[in-house]
Amino acid sequence: MVNPAGASAPLPTAYISHGGGPCFFMDWNPPHEWDGLRAALEGIGPSLGTTPAAVLVITAHWESPTFAIGGAAAPELIDDDGGFPPHTYRLTYPAPGSPPLAARIAELLEAAGIAHRVDPTHGWDHGVFIPLKVMYPDATIPVVAMSVRADFDPAAHLELGRALAPLRDEGVLIVGSGSSFHHFGNFGREDYAVPFDAWLHDALSRPAASRWQALTGWTDAPHARQAHAREEHLVPLMVAAGAASDVPARTIFRDRVLGTTMSCWLFD
Image (cartoon, rainbow, N blue to C red; front, side):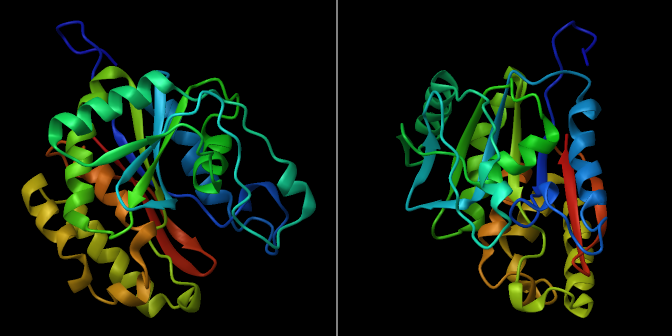
């Protein structure tokens, strides 16, 4: 993954559906419900052709009035879901945090005029450590988590991605962790999920300017509010797309989970 001039090529950014709670580490009926999404997450690392220097995860499960950056050197795991088997609350992910990367992110946001704060104690929710246990099970790569902004403004999250884009040249894998369909009352409603998913694929296939215009107006998509009653699981997509180049997104997963069509993408 080296360009002709000898410098490392920028890493892509990713938008992933992180699954339901500790879904990859428990028994399901049917037993292979999450196998396709697991395989997609497992394939991200090998597809890069290099090991990231660090991973930055923008997680749907951390909301803050201004963008918040996790600055802990050894973040604790947050049990932010309930009703799962006891063994899932004993899962570990001992990857290190990265205060230097948190400081670098703060520097980039300061330069872009984006309000932010560094939280030196915030841990990792299941939107961070569960997909990373699948993607990088050795837990050796430093990880920093970031919040979404509580107003869910799509333009602000696209601008956040633009500000973070230099990290791609610094070996940082930027991951938006959410779900392309997230409405508990409508799982299994393919009459909602399929048209909304098709709209997302069309929007993400466009050049950057048109892509931004579509994503800022995402509520005009077919069945938008049937797919996302609250968009905390969608706005991490805006961050990944905002940091991307003009190249159309690459689909790395598109299948039914819990009877509902969902997708994941990489952006070059």
